[in-house]
Length: 396
View 1: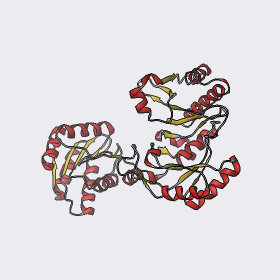
View 2: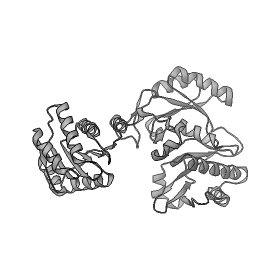
View 3: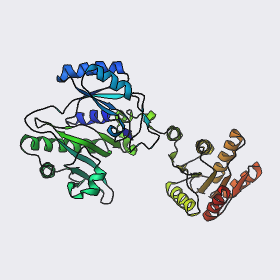
View 4: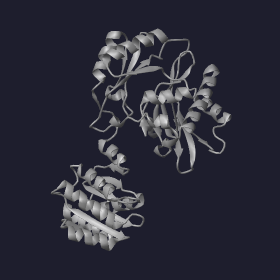
């Protein structure tokens, strides 16, 4: 689950990480009041108006603007709230901005220069360890830095049995070139950041940039946070931060029916039980010349209602030209799946796209009889390759 920047900063702050302060608002009028509050608390006439969407690269799309007075605050907020913000991470369709963060100006003059760094914490799945990835080149596309100057990317693996050790935090602060009070601040920052990551069962914390201010404070100017959905039951307060307006409506509907669904860009709808079988089904569709329109796992305990819900979700995609239902009856019974298909077909009415059904396993014969006697216009298959070839044939 992704959360907004302002929510990520709230979490970081609760663990002792210094952050760029801000107030989230929904309207230009609220933005002006928030800017007044920021001046009262921090003494600066300047604020940053930052679009709150689940995507990076907001500045490149015009979603992050500096405002030097209240008139500019209102104008910037008016321009950003309601805009369809397109960034390198949103795709060409972009995302609608519903709220903005009125953030503290932290690039103030002082005795030393400001400096931006990149720091992220994530799981290295190949080693089963957490890793802190960091660079002196913050505020830029880290992918570009990694491609053109890989020697500027540092990595520190953390043994989960003992956690982040003090010497590792000092090593990171040293490699980032900090010294004096900034060095001490960076050590505290890294230690608190890792503590937050570990405590909330995050799968990624990305802070870009981490800023060394002109008076040697270290703080998070941005916060991109991804959480492990399987662990959200341990964190109901964080689960409540979910913003479904940032998610695909069909995927939200699928989640409400306990379906594992991910929309893709192809033209063959898939309904499968089990993630492994779903991946194999998608692969064989590709090998047969088709292109999967979705990943959809109805689960091992699917019933007729679940299957009907899955059927309806697939048919909402206008790009779907055929549907492949591939069920292996182990825990789930094939006749339940067949009844769900029949119910959905009868409820929806005249379905224009061809349907290919492959049911094998528990009660497969009963399922075939149900479908044969239902009058549905479907193609049946026994082998998976046979089903894939039928898909290729009907969409040709």
